[in-house]
Length: 640
Image 1 (tube, rainbow, N blue to C red):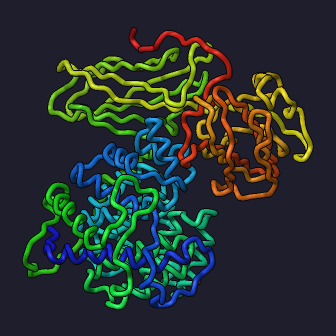
Image 2 (cartoon, rainbow, N blue to C red; image 1 turned 90 degrees about the horizontal axis):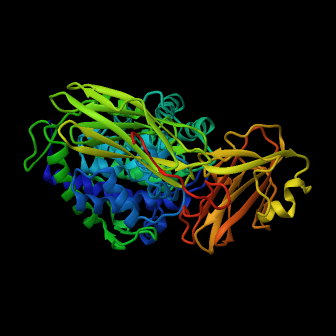
Image 3 (cartoon, helix red, strand yellow; image 1 turned 120 degrees about the vertical axis):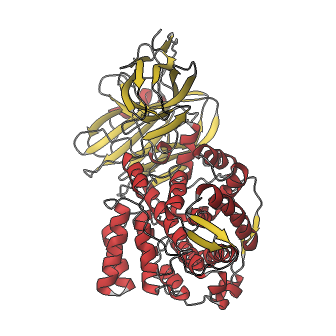
């Protein structure tokens, strides 16, 4: 049992928030800079600077409101609802996650599906909050962080948040920074990119004892085009802690001098040190010089704009006391008097957590009455024409008697559905798996952006429960090529094709069913290098101004309804940061979009997203169905 005093808990939480504000302010000026910096020990402008705002602090404000509303048993659905109400960020991973929420794609699938920023640091940037709410219980903090981060991240992006949340929780008990780093790593997969990157930093720091050399090795081995990569950020946080050995100024300045995502890495480093030292342990010159107030960013909607640090700390402690009593019961307690013996924190076992992480990000879990249900989408929650989609279902009996369950699947009109088992016997404590198959024949069905299916489970006690199965429509594209010189006009540039008067099903075009168009349209395109044309027909619900985000690693030209709307020709990395955004006018009804691209590299990359005027994904603009009129078929319901 970890025993903490009420006064000590409050002081550590105040220290965590104060350390985060100091770190965010110090790291803000060098945020996004890939070269090393020369940050002074106490920046002269610190006392006059407002905290450098980032989405990590913004989302922590949103999560605090959600916890105040729903309590310590807050669910992913509660967090999703709070996000949709209060967070309107339009950069990085945030609009992609919001698009998935609106397409009814549930967590953890929402974090990885069609999200080119799934490995970014957004979840890490807000993870210390969960450690503050579950002090001295790293595994519980990690479970909270997983529930949060799987909304908009997967893989390393998710594991980085778990690592930091575990360290923040352990910091209430453990002062040794190298021990904190190891405790955090015990919560994630040893084989994952996150653990490998942090362990390499620990090893390089031991070998070179030079932060600049270790930083160089980290970037050489793990850097990407995106300065917000979560593995690099975690590596810099670990490096700052190890190099500074817990000394506040040295750790903060080291993180700032490493550059890259220094706004986030300095904030996280400061928060960890503040939790370790407490507010009173932070050097007075730092406490006195920083503005102890957060002003919420423009992406926060419907919440107060100004948050004094003292108010944030008090609200965090109020929620934390509830979490400790509810979720940490038997492992952590708060008392008034200092215990005779200092608490000792054992390494968390976290076997169940690591098993859950190993399942992957395309398995959704539900609890319905006596049955626990897992829906395994086998790598993608999508459906395309004439491509049968198989989904695995696992039912687990959670009660101490045998259950008889009958399964039935419903789907949109024209879809064909089958199950490999409609009657299932579930003995006490057992799990039974079966397959569902859903297909959309082109002559009978029309695939929409959202194709809601429902699994009905009739239990022998007379109850019936339902589980949603989200199938996102695959984008329908057509490809032609390769042709010769990019600067020359080729056959697909004839007026009828550009305007939409000629059908794309004509000879010479190859149909592509694209699961993740906002990540890479060309994932399944094969062929020699050269000039290619990609075309699609987009159905818009009304005439409106929109923004096209087009990413390509070589030359690109774009036509919309016969008009050239964009052109560039330069070699770029295969990265979501290669995207260009430009305004277009969508007309009511069908719109022909044609992209001409040069592919001079074996690595093929083309992404496309349509956004509204506020920068959110315009999922109402649909390119999942053939152009032209269509009469719907009769509804499909397995078993009828």
